[in-house]
Length: 301
Image (cartoon, rainbow, N blue to C red; front, side, top):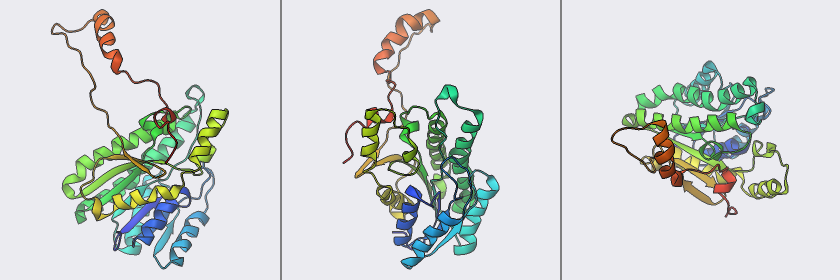
């Protein structure tokens, strides 16, 4: 499905990104493997992970090149896209997958922990997408696949930075889809459920959490790759501005915020009337304080 396509996959040195890159290559794409080779919290720098994936791809006869620029800097993001064009002549798809975690309860979260996660996930997705957007526009086609998360779409404990970034990515993707649709450019999101280095860092403090993590172990990163390849291919020309979730063998299309219920007073509202009338009338449509595991409460299938 990807014959003749050139694909950039960020954070492709391991986990979900690696499996997406491998399947893109097996499906005929030439792939730029971007990974800074950092730890899960963003420290360190190594060319090893990206180069190792390149060697895996070359071993089955496909083409790939390694890149170690940081998506968190505009110049680095631009170099990633430039490398795709310089090496393979074009760029057709960007998979924004790079990420780090700095989990902390909100009342204990530092500015540095907030900034680091936003820079890689949200700013990184913007920088790489922006670097590719003009080329997509000029050639009249292109596909963005962004990794969001149910941590942002639904909620999770101790992840204010990650949740804000991932919900921001959903908004970014929708804006890209709206602004560039007339140029034949598509933008969609995937919220992946998969056992990876990032999930491996989840704190397990209770038997319930331990049982949940054990279920997540069943969901390998390779389960995410087929949808990412499809969304990057010409077969998905009619799919734009959507949010999907993948959980083992399940694929979901996720809802997007829309009005649920309204109240009206022709004379307007006072704070007292809101307390007496509006809130009691709207309360039945309130959302509970769910976390992702509350909404996806059944075992992966």
